[in-house]
Image 1 (spheres, rainbow, N blue to C red):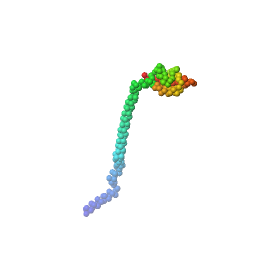
Image 2 (tube, helix red, strand yellow):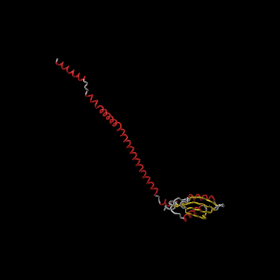
Image 3 (cartoon, rainbow, N blue to C red):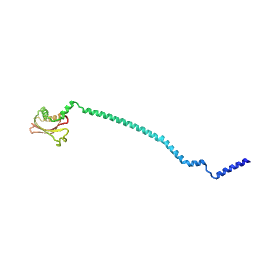
Length: 211
């Protein structure tokens, strides 16, 4: 009977506790720290996403960039090797032999030698049955239209009169004059009515720096 009484007292106390509306401690803790827990979970999800997605993408980007840099280094090295070979090729072109220099002096002599010119011109005329009658030469000054600068190649104007009778030979002589190893730039030609006297005006050059 005493036990029944105790049970009644305990049941009555629980009923009073429930009836009084006393809150549950676990529910209070969850409600209090729910925001913190949610933020923590979101941060962990973001970290996991970075590790599995962003980090892998960034790693792939770094690998691609490394390959690009390696290719760029190889291309630069190739260009540098090409530059060295090009400089070597240019230096070999500049270094010409004494024979080449003598040939260059014939094409563009370092000075205008009137006597040598007359000999060369007369021999060429004789080869086509022409005789040199008169030769007038004059230095072409800078600004006169033939040579624009005082440095570099200089020009000499030549006016020559030749005696001959064959017009076909005259045409062959003019062709040979233009094809001569020394530069002869023909400006004008003329002939007398009878065809015995021919005149040619041309310009030849020399290069003072070619000494």
